Length: 171
Image (tube, rainbow, N blue to C red; front, top):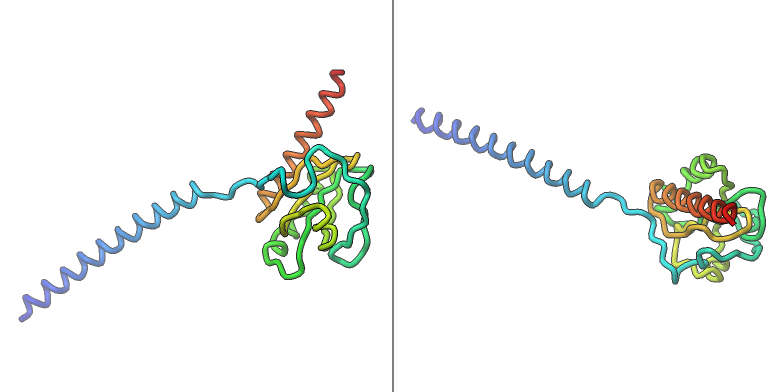
């Protein structure tokens, strides 16, 4: 009977090693899939939010801390407006990175919790970012789900501002 025990024990170890190899192979495939389906950039849809390239008239808005702020119209520096909702977990995850993204681009950051203004600007949901230049012209906009998408919208806005400045200097 001891021969059967040795054979069973050996078979168990062979199966355990095969299982380990299968787990490593599946983990590798999962990692590859994760890299392929990594975070996408923020989605700028023309029909959603304020129109790109057009100026926003100065509008009073409710900040998430309850204060009143102005969005649109001329300002000293470009602005990033992050529209959030009270019970939005993604908003809570994106909001802490906003000041750093704004500082790195030399912009002011506004966190707005104003459902009425969201309706007037045709914002589809939160978190939604609108980046305006010094003249109040919308330079980029879109729904964001993470800090990378927020930074992408800021970079896009900076690029569009620079392109317009070069175009104006060439004239």
